[in-house]
Each structure stands twice: as C-alpha cells, then as structure tokens.
Length: 90
Image (cartoon, rainbow, N blue to C red; front, side):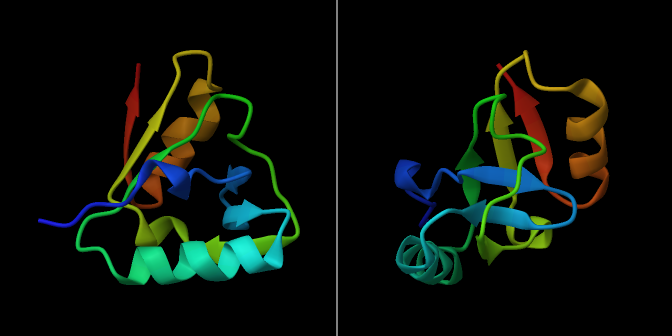
C-alpha cells in the first residue's frame, strides 16, 4: 500500500484553498505525489490550519487523513473533517 510522504506537509490548509504552499514548483511536485498515492495522509501543525498561500496543490477531498496537533482550532478542524478527511489530533 502506498501512502503519502512526510514532505507532503502543506504551508497552509483551509476550507477554501485546500492544501497550499508558497512555491508553485513545490505545489506541482506535491500535486503529483497526491495523484500517485492510494491513501493520502497529510501532517500539518496547528499553525498551518486555516492559512492560505499562493499555490494550491490539492483539495480537502484529496486527503484521507489529516494529522495535526491538539493546539489546532477545534472549529476549523471540525469543518475540515466535515469536508472530507478524517482529522486526527495528537
């Protein structure tokens, strides 16, 4: 089973812009990584939740599991989970 690498970490993740980063080249590579996996697990620390950057590389529907810290805003993570991915807080 193929899963996503840890470097799939986004610069930001939001309801509106999904997975995003500041670098368009990086976004292109991450988009390819998502399309090559069967299950996409995305690590994102609490500072990335709810933030947006220039280059989008995925939608929330592209994620199977989002792993974040317990300092992430509960309301935002709940809304993200309602949009598709399972959200695990650690």
